[in-house]
Image (tube, rainbow, N blue to C red):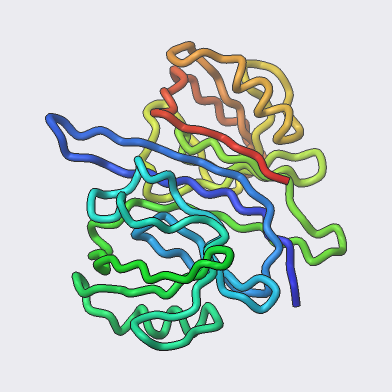
Length: 244
């Protein structure tokens, strides 16, 4: 059964140069797929089945990839035909073959782009060295079941609009934010004293606060009001894109 998925993905990659820095890329897209999806972490990629074909649904910009993967020409919409000489048609078959490849060994994908067919080869990454990927998927069953969601990665949280409430889901792995007392299930009631009831209101008010300016977030937790005051953190190059 084909389902519509609203996907918010945040990718954070650390580079060891003269100092450690992080680059963050966030993207919001709507996709229609035929079931499950799978993350290919080497490329910050999401693969899935569309109209009976296995393909790359989204990929991370190449400048966010590690050196070994920057020059591998893989693009969104590329169709996946084979892995290491074996024909694959489903996400389950992709995962089964990928899982038996040893870390550091080559993964060879047979791909089709338009009328062109080619092979792309890359080493399987050690999970400990992989770019950090945080992804949340909301499914729409065609009966109005989709969710209103937005990502505030620099605050380590995902916000869901539920009726006239704005509910928090914290994101593990992006680190704690100094001065912010937030927990999954909290209901955000105010930002800098202004009431909030939707992700649209959050996005508009939050975007109007400059980096480094003080902000106060009020949440309801178990019937009690919790206030956090902090300086708005930098987004470290975060980009938001919306595709319909």
